[in-house]
Image (cartoon, rainbow, N blue to C red; front, side, top):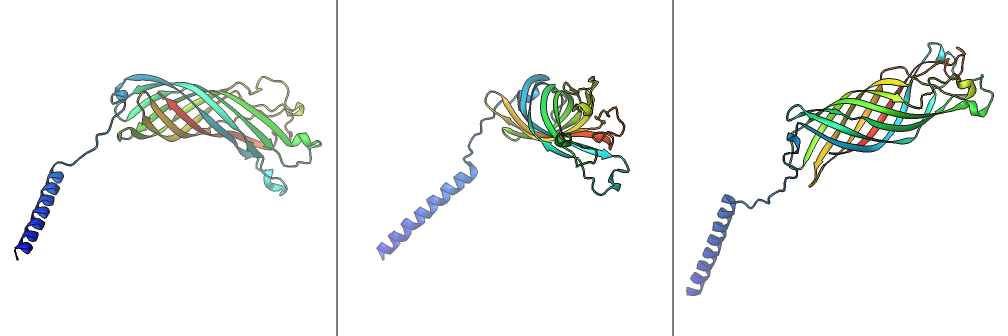
Length: 248
């Protein structure tokens, strides 16, 4: 009987001790302290950085109304090549969630046009045209960020930009009859994108993906209004996707 009482008492004391420990832990929880990197970085009125990344460009074509009357005619296909981009940035803080950014950069890209087999083509080389583009890219963007979560912060970004194409051949007197494809040397675009800010110990690292959409016809027609390369195209607009990695 004494043995049973002693066992019961020991069990009671053990359970009572566990309850005391549980209550203590509930009142004073153990919280692992997080290290906040660059806590005052976003309070700067102006700061600078640089970026690099890759891009791919396409073309959107609008054809003359009679283009599809002949069922053998197909769209001009675009073979996309990966290009690169690099540049600098200046950031102006508007408030906690809005920043105005200027991100001048150099964008290089290459596209190959694959034409349908028009009756006017007499050589195999007539079916393709290589377009190399070297853009001086000048965007003015508004960055809208969410509230910072520890060392992480999502954002969306958008705005307008203009491109100066150093490879446009606009001033070249030759055209596709001499295997020279010409586009205007300046175009206007709008841009939309999203990304994430990661606050590291020494700097902020921000990957983002952006769409670039031209709003201006870029095609310069050939001298021959019946040219198979340009005569059937009414408008031609660039469409680009850029992966941008920013260091600030």
